[in-house]
Image 1 (cartoon, one colour):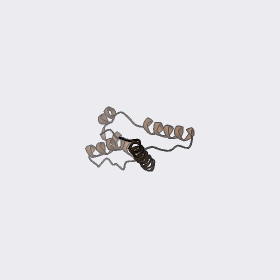
Image 2 (image 1 turned 135 degrees about the vertical axis):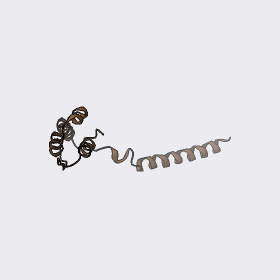
Image 3 (image 1 turned 30 degrees about the horizontal axis):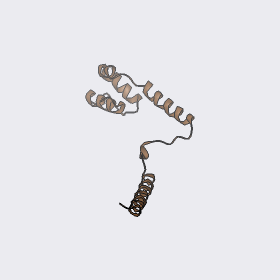
Image 4 (image 1 turned 120 degrees about the vertical axis):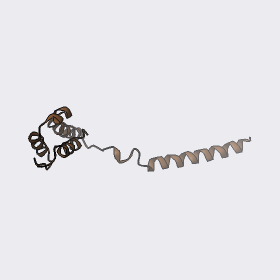
Length: 102
């Protein structure tokens, strides 16, 4: 290959690289899955909210052993509309689904 051919190939390779870099910058990677945080205080507030949400929950084994009136009271305390006239299995399923334990 002559020097001119090498220079032409280099020019093509550099143009392709520029095009590739421009495309990469235009693509939303990693996308909306990441959260942009303004400050450390925002992160700490979010962590505290998650901790407070988890502290009020009971272990799955304890929930499964509850009698029906206690289960209904617990379901109502976490924001589920339940009544003692409902089937225990239905109330239990709603509670476990809400807590992400099912």
